[in-house]
Length: 213
Image (cartoon, rainbow, N blue to C red; front, side, top):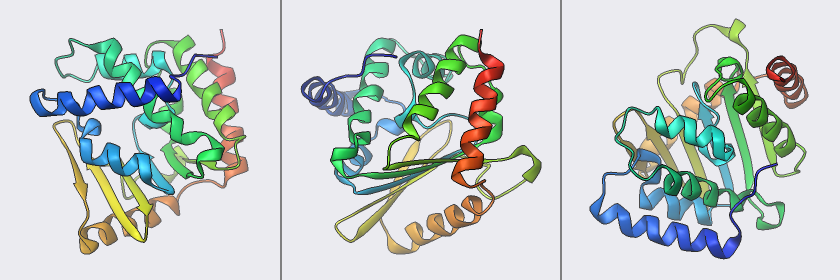
């Protein structure tokens, strides 16, 4: 299993990243405001129709996602390490509940090649063993459903909720109640299409076996 960035290193990476936000044109998910929110939330919901959410990605999968994003990337390793640094909040003792909904098509898109996808799916299965993480899959048979236009995140902390939406060009953090309520309604609609946890795990395991070399 891959080596993850430790707490001290994680803080260093994230601090450097925030400084770079001032002068660079980063990928949307690295907006400093969202990083702060994500690092302090107690509940986090993620949905993505095309990719494994960044907070769950292995180094190799993250590298494949970033390098094929269409953006100019001249610091790939640093971006990968910064993405991994976010994952310290997944540790159960941090008290963060994370629920992720992923489209089934993600399980069959071999970003980085079959080996990379297999390791990524095994990582998902490992994460679902933690009491604070739930991963659910929207089966292909559903067809069209709300949310296919792009990924989204919702974070809750201290009685306040925030939403994050992105597209190929930019990301946006929403904190106005009406905007967040709209994203939450979208989440409820797409989550309603997802399989229960146990069935989702079985689907991930089946897909992982397919990509096993």
